[in-house]
Image (cartoon, rainbow, N blue to C red; front, side):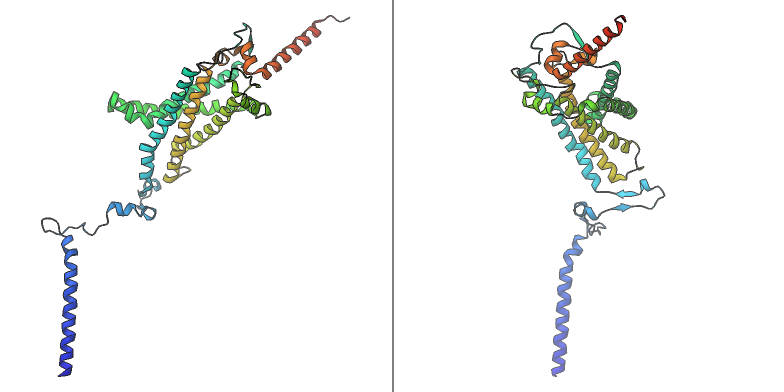
Length: 341
């Protein structure tokens, strides 16, 4: 009798546990059914948001011979896309438009830097024809690269609504080819100006004094300078470093998968874009100083000569060297022309 009761109790406990398990499973079964009562095959699937939260562990490839086409899923591409479509546009607009706004304010408040003593009327040679050729080759190439490159970042939000999709597509395709081919002339120009002017852009003690005296922007102070002042030297070294960065990253993008995989090319594109935007902002400042911002400065690259008083005010040490050389050359010529006794 006692054994019978024990067995009955065990059977009742088992039935109760089974009933609880069925009741607990009912909601899960219900969730796997669609609104019409039919089974939902994706009910147990993990949502995309849950997958993206595990992005460091997500990587998908397929088995095909071409290694470049094997990557099926790369969540880091979403971060790159957000950078290109959102972050870069804000960064570029702030850097470039901010520089233009700052220079506009300087022009309105301070105005162009005039030759305080007025023009002397006598010019001195500053750049020879080959130096000016190298400068303009680099400058024109840079402007073309800047405009065609900015189209990649801002074209869809600036030009596309204005000219329409067909014209924008043709323009962007042409701009891409122009950008790629003009890069060669930029490389040549950058190499030339580096070879020509690197010796004149070595930092010296006089550069510190130039900065202390306000760099020529304070009319009551005189800032001494050699052939290139500290500001020009900063632009030179920045242009050299930024130029190398955009060249290396640009050619990695022009020849994909030769030296970098997808992740490497994404990094190269970020470097290329960020450095290029900063490069454009700095060169806008350089163009302002060489044109509207300083009287007589543009003549140096336009004609190769500058007014004597301009040279005295902005590059006095270099002018002294030039005048000394001319004086010695003249004396040497007179000595050689004197008749022998």
